[in-house]
Amino acid sequence: MRAAERVEEARRCIERAHRVAVLTGAGISAASGIPTFRGPGGLWEGVRPEELATPEAYARDPQRVWSWYAWRYRLAYQARPNRAHELLVQLERDKGDGFLLVTQNVDGLHARAGSQRLVELHGSLHRARCEACQHRFPLPPPETFMPPPRCPRCGSRARPDVVWFGELVPGRAYQRAAEAFRTAEVALVVGTSAVVEPAASLGRLARLGGAYLVEVNPEQTPLTPLAHLSLRCGAEEGLEPLIGPRAPGTA
Ligand code: APR
Picture 1 (spheres, rainbow, N blue to C red):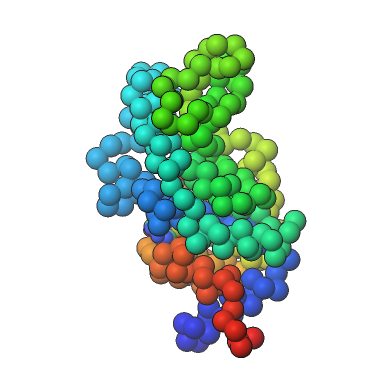
Picture 2: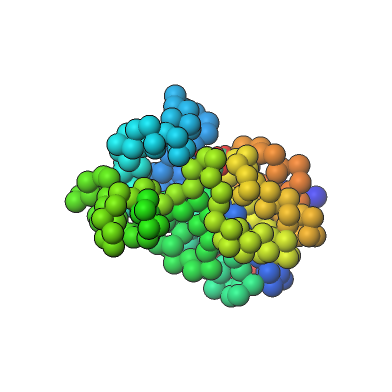
């Protein structure tokens, strides 16, 4: 089958499906100016995740860890959702309750674009969580934010509300994500290297459940061999022909 026919086949599968699950990673926000983690120019180039994104790193040097998260918060705050985020909002409108978007991203751009059936599996740069009472609260705008923040309820120091390496993702959020992927008719996996668990397994779960699996990523990933269609391109370019509006006069 020619490439255009395979894209058309995937598009029809998506159109027909009542249950669609989507997993996104850092690559979907690349066009919004947010750096990815792995690969050239990524956040993990020249720095090991254990130095910044673990409970041990935070215990060792909370100020350094907070400075890094405050910088990323500023970037995310200033960024705008791109066409790929917007196309997923449109897909959610079409599918309603049969849709779930699961993101590993902490930049908040899916929510800002308008996605509502959304699981932010790794938390959010825009919030902090009290180290004592676990209360979650939004950070002030970056211009006035001086880390570390203090809990508005009990006054204790608060940490970034993100999931670090070595920590568990929130159980209920993962259950919801796993259920959506297990029962999906179509699963889209966009802009993730698919190497960090448990998110990496969601695509496999979907495949085991019989879903049609589509990947959009300029690079190969461990999920590529399982995908019915793997588009080697950026998220905006890949999603447009799959879920964007049809050109007038085409069926
Ligand atoms: N469109 C789509 N994909 C892209 C684009 C783009 N414009 N640019 C890069 N990519 C792809 C890369 O090829 C890569 O496979 O996005 C992927 C980004 O991979 P990672 O940097 O590993 O990001 P992610 O998969 O989200 O990482 C998972 O790892 O460090 C942790 O907690 C962090 O949530 C993160 C998790």
